[in-house]
Length: 374
Image (cartoon, rainbow, N blue to C red; front, side):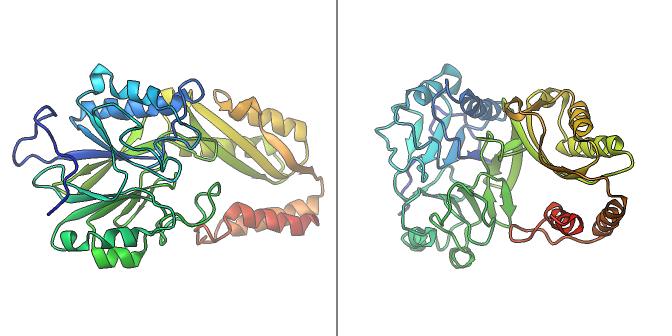
């Protein structure tokens, strides 16, 4: 018999027979307190507001709702008790940053914390959902095995917190090591319809496995617009919705080569970067960009001035301005010619990509070190 920990109640938004049920999924908010990090609370409120607009009443948070430093959850409780949020329910599994939270940690009635693996049925027509909170020293496969008999003949979805061993490699430099891994063998053996994971802050979609990513950039390394996911349980469809965050981080690097017209080179590069961000005018105001420049130029002061001009209208991260500490001066015409030939040749190559492979900028910097003798 399935252990149904939570169901849609009569007081929740009604779902008519035959109508698809949708749930929202997110994770890795790392809430501390509103004075220190108001943007993280605001991201959660924005997700809840979008859920109301779409008539979605259940949010599943896949771990690390709270940061390891937090012990007082009263501000989160107050948010959940707001009048506009009372008919929403939040299903939370602990992550490696908040493994000790439990039902006694948060008193809001619309919050349920799953402190041990548990099967949940949100509606009669949809798949069963297996919630697996983070457990130190365990694997997800071990946790799934305990429920294998119940899940064998069912459509089911996994929500957990840990590392997908076939996916992003070295994606979390702040937490080296392996956290409650899930393997492709687990997927093949137990056959979940979809897998939604927390822990890695980079959005990722690989086959049936999905990381929602952090809904608000926690620092400048978590770049670009953030998202949360909507899962249509009846149609097995996943949609990605943007989170309206207070800050949008970008971390860019320019490999500079001496050129006949360095001003034009800088402005062309900056325009390509800005266009790639694909931001609205409103979103541009939220940008905090960290800009590192490496390589060679003929006039460092002019380079700094033109970079600031090229990014007019955007704020630099911590008001630091462009970092030109890795730029050297060179007026050697012959080496400039060689460097340009190398760059032109590299632009024609197909780069393999992947976390274990050097990117084009890294290769170009290595080539410049050879050309200029550094």
